[in-house]
Image (cartoon, rainbow, N blue to C red):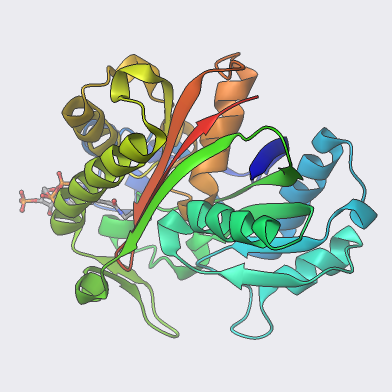
Length: 306
Ligand code: UT7
């Protein structure tokens, strides 16, 4: 079976919050945040719905498709506007979609989990699926907690996946979950995000490398064949450590966390969009998309843009 990426769109809030601004109210510094995470600034504002609507509309426009063309909406979000209803039906309504719509929550692996879900739906008869990753993480940040406040931010990205009987952009997947590590990164009802950063860091590198190697093996290629790595944007040092272990130079990795911080399930499409704007997406070339996050969850995919 073939699946093609048909269009992409992103949305970020206008409000830029720099490291210097955070340093005014937190015991932190631009130097610490840049050196330990790679983040310089982030965008704050909107909601999963408003950002998701914008990104979704832009992806449909980019694909040259209208609401009637879409027959399923899968929204990846860790930060739905409400516990019920799900945010996807509200986004669908704003976009004029009348198709089924549902949320997927796999934290920072969410976009790749949504892509995998869409792939399965296309396998079973759907033709075009709008996949959105949209997050309003700032709502669940304790702004007096320097551990989380310097990391998390808001944003959205979207793509339209279309069934194609002949060609495929999605070559292989490797997804996983380990709920025994659930307490390492949590946000309780009515609470704020909390994390054991060092332990998440250690495990993140391990699962990214492991799932990437498995996805590469299933695709029948090696890391040398990859032109691009589009990783979840949590920490530049995680990206450096994982690519180094995979034998991939950092030049092949897309990094946008300096501008956007960690936007969870929006981070991979934000990185993709940046790569596209900079002419780094080339037909026929292989790329690795890889995410990890609370759960723990992880997900890697090998793609080849047709
Ligand atoms: O999206 C998926 C989930 N999230 C992640 O993948 C995040 C994974 N973890 C990380 O990115 C890193 O562990 C952090 C960026 C969270 C922390 O970096 P680190 O190098 O692991 O620092 P650390 O936690 O070992 O802390 C080093 C020091 C500590 O001080 P002491 O004990 O050495 O005196 C912290 O208290 O840095 C201190 N610190 C800070 N200082 C200034 C912690 N946060 C800050 C801060 N500003 N914001």
